[in-house]
Image 1 (cartoon, rainbow, N blue to C red):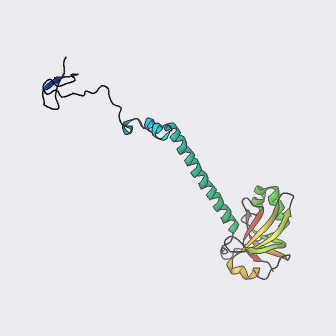
Image 2: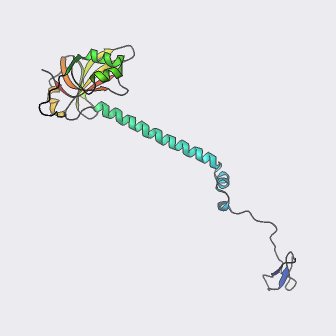
Length: 211
């Protein structure tokens, strides 16, 4: 069936496909083929692949890698914070209920370090969170990462690792540390916090000098 349209110039009826209007002789331009839709109307994956050079599946892989990097960074931060908090060990001494008496465990620095080197789990069960009286020779005197007074006792030494006992004092007991010197034999009482993460060091918190 013949289709009729109006001439855009004079309004006369013209048949589909006629090149010139029979009334005003205006040339008629009929569309010869369907035009492609613009980029933003195409499928997302096709548009992304042509514009950015990769497909939707590749985009998902890139996003997955980004999430892995973020999660790895968060985990590394958690580990670093745990190390810093464990090393600090300081803080003010905790109070005990009135009338409570706790008998300290007596041990020397070498015995304590050897126990942790042999079996950390067994050593934690025996010493961690318990009050110890540790005797030994002072290796170093200084401050920890949080500026608390710290005294290190010689522990044990092997070919590949060297243990020490890190004794952290509260700010109230800092005056006790001023009376000490390297190479001095001493007995220190404190609460065992176990072995420091990634370090060959056994930590004692809330320490004091035993007279």
